[in-house]
Image (cartoon, rainbow, N blue to C red; front, side, top):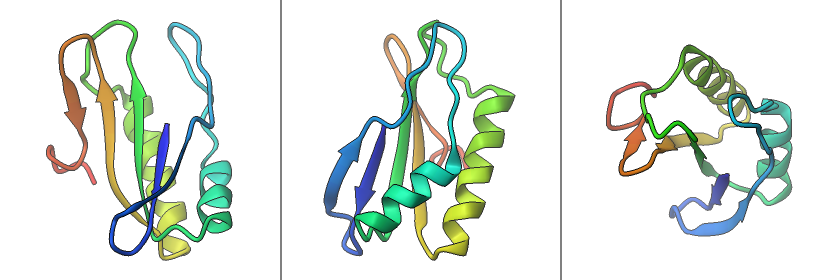
Length: 99
């Protein structure tokens, strides 16, 4: 799920861009940036779930977040957070200084 926001951090639109299986999801930074440019977003928030219920980010989660952040930065789009939703809690990359 990606939340596309304007300069005041108001929601422009939310979009589920990718579907995954029980243990993997293909995420393409290009598609996220393309949609952000299309709707003239100034910022975005990423979110996905971990079916296992464990919210700790995997190495892949960290790597794809960095790739998205780097691509967004080139287009002057801010990545405000990446949330991982588990069974009973939520992990925030921003709160844990990973952005």
